[in-house]
Amino acid sequence: MRLDRMGSFHQSRLSFMRILLRRMKREAWTFDRPRFDVDANGVGTALYCAHTPERTYTLVAFAHDLPDDQRSDRVIATAWDTTFTLHDGVPTENDVERLRANVPLQEAGRVAGTELTLSRANRSVRLWSKVIDALAGGEQPDADAVEEVGYLMRTTAVYGSGKFGAADRQSVADREELLAPFQAEMLTVYLIRTFVMDLVENMAKHVSPNAVALEPALRRRFGIGNSTGLGMAPFLLTHPRLINNWIAAREEGLRRVRSVESATSDEQEMFRRVVAQSRQLVDSWHSAHEIQQTKLAELRDDIDAIDRYLEAADLLRDYAWNDLVTWSETALSLEGQELVVSLLLEPYGHLVDELVDQMHADESAPAAIDGRTPVADVRSAIERSYPWALEIDWDGDDADARAWYVSEEKLEPRLGERHEEPIGPFEQPLQPGRDVARMYGDLGQWSDTDDLAAFLRLHPEHRHVARRVLLMDDKPYAEVRDNTIASDMLPIDLLRAKLSFFGATRFDPRSDRWVRITMFQGAPFPHELSSADPDSWVYPAP
Image 1 (cartoon, rainbow, N blue to C red):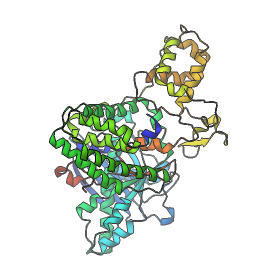
Image 2 (image 1 turned 60 degrees about the vertical axis):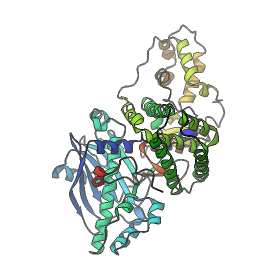
Image 3 (image 1 turned 90 degrees about the horizontal axis):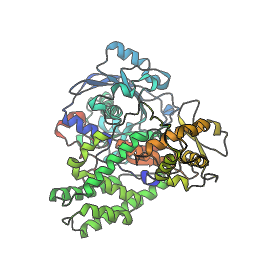
Image 4 (image 1 turned 120 degrees about the vertical axis):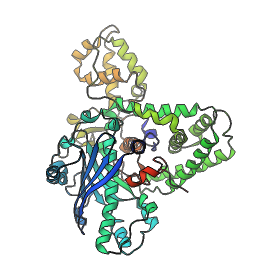
């Protein structure tokens, strides 16, 4: 749970996109497009329905003709090429008109409890026109250009969980298909991808009646891009029970694989295959950011090292996977070590996939503080769970260099320089290490037999962290065990950790505070799911 390791996580079988596609396949979801009213300029309305065994969800898409100079990745943008909402059920015409008046406005509009998400996306300036021109001319777009960019549209937000009037998470959390984390958001992006591909082909048809459709294999190489910034970063700090369950499931999956005494020939062959395919994925992964360029160079060297290991290793020996992990911990970079973890889960869906059922958490009510807890027990809990925090000199300027706050304009998390800006009074409680260390210092003035309630009556400023300490004591993965306000802290590590659980690939930091990713690249489209493997799409064939 250190930031540099979390910032090296990769997608895996337990990522939320893959959870969704496996469910769709298993339950034989059906899809249709009851409406597609879009003109030659790409302006109009479309509806895409996903029918589960119990209910229907509908993506309501509004396409706009946005001038190039208004296209922006920034959360402060006010206009987008496309805007979306995921409607609970099949919308009536009145619903569509209500949504048309609000969804294109995004934050300035309001949706209702019948909507689960709100999203928007912009066209790729590099690819959009090129793909339309190629198809209109009867040709396929350049495959290398497609692979380099990876998407035709890039979302700048997928809001849910009550934001801007949408349904609260608790109102739908008991639905089996939405129990796993972020399933409504992943379904939204999956259907957006389908709409985007239909839109570009439709616009090409308007240019020329002789336009061709995208070749299916090339069509699947388009994912959905996403730009994510600081707004997402605090999530890992504000949802400790949930994060504990995500990491615990992943660690348990790895434990199970490491405990396999003898790998079958099929399991060995599948692992060797995904190692080879991972090279293709990494070779197509580019970044303009110096930090990620260094990590990618190390990762390519790591894959070479894994190849050499597999050439020499006897995978028939007992506990061969455990030996591989042990070797990786000293032979590979963090990127390489975490890639090994993800790859090892691939042959073992029968051991790993059921862990999805442990990845949700009910966070509708805060954990209670037992005021009868003796001060000695609180101190012991801190010493068990937060030794790293007690080792930091929090009086140093570098350790306490930054402060998290919420911007008044956008109500979004921001990270400021504490000693350069007057932001101290607006600081959010997103630095648990420092706050725990401060409480530990104040507890030193109390006797072991004093109770926590008495302490908190005189020190109410520690209530939030007292609750956290008691909550963490039996949840080993609930806390980011690092300084989240240090001068050298990289928020992109927090973003990478969360996005890896989404199932994102091709992380491309644009600074230390925001990153571009690709989602669902290679995934089968709705009409292909019945005959497709819902897991094999992540690693392209060599």
